[in-house]
Structure formats: structure tokens, C-alpha cells
Figure 1 (spheres, rainbow, N blue to C red):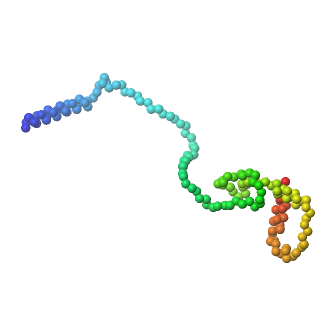
Figure 2: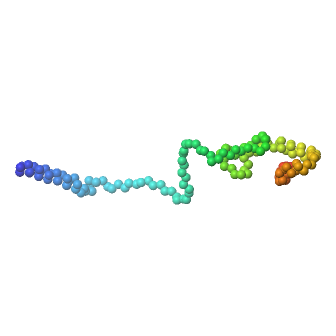
Length: 146
């Protein structure tokens, strides 16, 4: 047993010596001069701006409400000023109609003598009280347009 113990002891000392040589300090001649490594850097001026995020989605949209747009008069459509799906507010002009027929009717109405209708109190009572004034204001506005 003593022989086996000696073999292990010698082998352990040899391994310990080899480890000491491998981990030992190195001299200047063995290591190259220290190399300075540079890293490229790009600089940017700081500024305040909005961040934008873009999403690409696929699907279909359902409107909150369907609003039919109906012309109150019949005329030729000359120009469409809004596209389908555009947001518009009340009173926004969305199309231009040809007013030739209206101008001809106005000119005809101005040149014709007024019609004499028989007066009837029953007919007058059947009318909406404010309707006549509204129609007269609308007619005067229409006739005063160039």
C-alpha cells in the first residue's frame, strides 16, 4: 500500500506543479502591449417632439350611425366637395348643384303677373300660421340672389 500511496502522492505533486506554472504570473515579454479598443459613437442633438406609433390593422369598421344625404331639390351635380367617410359638420357645403333651372324659374316668376286667387276664410284658417311668413322669407331670399 505504501507503494500505491507514493504513486498518488507523486502524481498529485506533479499536477500541483503544472497548475502552479500555468496560473503563474506572466512577464512583459510574454504578453503583447495593451491594445486600446475604440468604439464608434454617434451623437444627436436633443430636441422635443411627439412620439408617433403606427399600427397596421386588418378588419372592418361599423359606423355609429347611417346618415342619408338627400337633396331637397332635383338638379345636376356639378362638383363633389367631400369624399365618403369625411367628417363634416352641420352647414358644411358637400356638393355644388347646377342652378340654371332655378335661375330660369326665378326670372320667369319675376316677369309673370301675380295670380289673383279668390279669398276664402276657411282656406286661410287651414294654413299653418307661420308657414306663409317662412315661404315669403325664403322666396325673397331666393329672388334677391344674383
